[in-house]
Amino acid sequence: MTTPAASALPSIGAVVLSQGTRMAELIRCLDGLRSQVGIDLDILVVGNGWVPEGIGDGLRTLALAENLGIPEGRNVGAAAVRGELICFIDDDAWIDDPHLLARMAHAFTLRPEIGSVQPHVCDEHGTTMRRWVPRWRTSDPDRPGPGFTIAECIFVVRREAFDGVGGWPGHFFYGHEGIDLTWRLWDAGWEVFYAGNLTAHHPATSPARHAVFYRHNARNRVWVARRNLPAAIVPVYLAAWILITIVRLAREPRALVTWGRGFVEGWRTYPGQRRPMSWSTVRHLARLGHPPIV
Image (tube, rainbow, N blue to C red; front, side, top):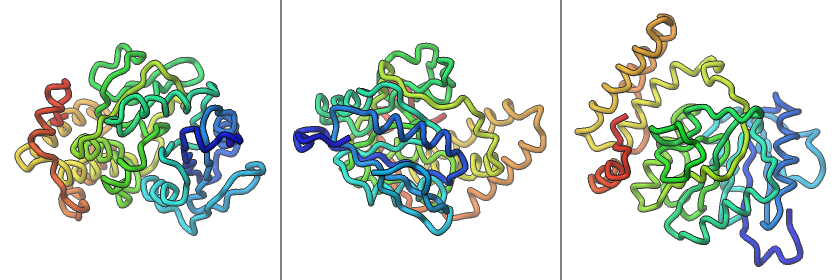
């Protein structure tokens, strides 16, 4: 929402990536964005292999000829949207607080070292899934603090920080791109902040509903380690995730086999440019209570 005094307001570009398969949810998402006050907001709907239509007037759209995957679709949107801050929001996520983005933007003003801010995410019943709380201790999702991954369904990132670390790893297509971006932000000297006192919403769905989930989960887990971790930590990190996955999928042998194939694929294929984090970043994350080994 742009006002006559927009030049004095925080500028945010909202990237909504959609394939046009969840129209009711998309409209709800856009209505929540349109309701935001206290910011200069540029909303861009990116059609990932879809021409955005039937979404109402006054919105900018960008149609991609094919589905480029989630991270690359977001990269395209980030390059086309205006704003010193960028809000990435899933088409099935929604905001019911008209002041949410202004409050998130205020965090960047108060603390220049902050590179990204993620709100507390819960579903329509108030349920918060463990994967939405970006730290090990998830029992108190209302508690703010440093974040060690990103729930990509909704968060805001400083454009300077996002561009400085190279944006999303576009070739990941789907899975663990939030870990990759988080590690790179921390290593570049930015703080990843979890604003547990601010709330947004997303359906409590299982990521395993996607056909590519187990394969990409494993392949990208290897890629994110090979790209970002010091060589000595890579086998420790991956060994931990092998054990975790075996325990989780012990009663799902087909899923475990698919995961194993994806793991091998991650070693046999190019993970993208390798820029291992410094040992000082490893120590810093360890001091904060979340060393990059799990």
